[in-house]
Length: 95
Image (cartoon, rainbow, N blue to C red):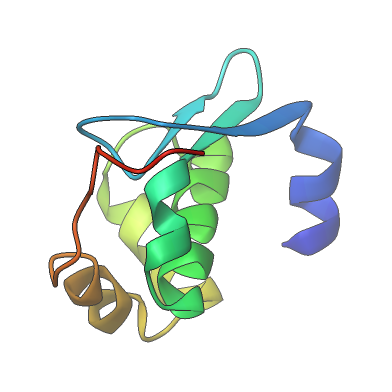
């Protein structure tokens, strides 16, 4: 998957998002990650990145999408659950 993703991804970045941990625009091959992921366990960051990269192969949350998640990150559900644990977001920080 790594080589396939590397060639498919054209742009990536980090920004503050209020409702999502990450987003993928499959047509423009662009991925954005939420700045607040820096407050989470590194496995959560990896989960969100894999999740968004899989969207380059499968744009919807179809059965194929979840099969690809299982293939490339077998414990993804465990890391997804970690994202719901505090701290979720702290908007008063100065960067």
